[in-house]
Length: 269
Image (tube, rainbow, N blue to C red; front, side):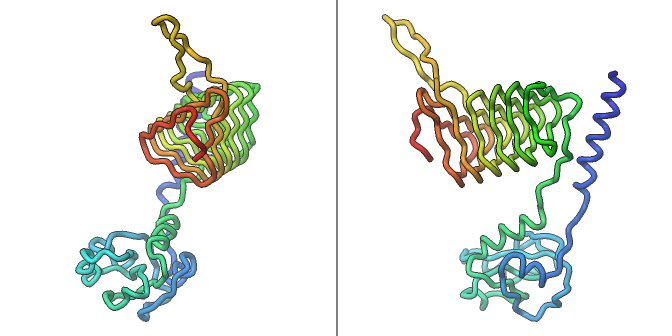
């Protein structure tokens, strides 16, 4: 049995690693369309672009971006980038082809996403993971090494559970959510759709509830849960406590940085 698991583990690793070596190339004209920019400066429209980099390091097949930082104007003047994502008001400072749009930083975000798409996960359960027979997982779910999925947990389509994660009893996870390594979702936690949670985060642990009984502390049971809305991203090693009586609620579209503590009773974010 152990030899079989070793083979299964190797196959899983190769299938997931193989796509990481692929490199995307897109014409500069198509890039302009994808990020919502106007192409100016007479470049070859079929010029292949392979990535995005800083003004000082970008090559002739990479694009860069410029916002309003005066200290970067010298780098802009000397850049070797194939084109620069830039606002119309700053065109006079640029000597190379331009991808002109009102919000260059948004253009940068869109271009960076194109050249660095999330690595697809192969659906299936890693042989070293444990999934309760009472858990309900869509066939498209990916569960990584050493993960634990408890009874009555529910997962929608295209959910990715990273290595070492713990999904406790009855936790609900919506479509297209991604848990990075070592995330813990405690009982009473519900995730909306397209939620990203970075490594080491704990959601739904007990809040700090204690009653004083003549100098001795009596733990107060935490009866609420945690409700996470759609399109939320939570940074690494962040903790969100369950509510004492009602749910702790993180609304749609919220972004939380690393190492944040959200205690029970926090107003809806």
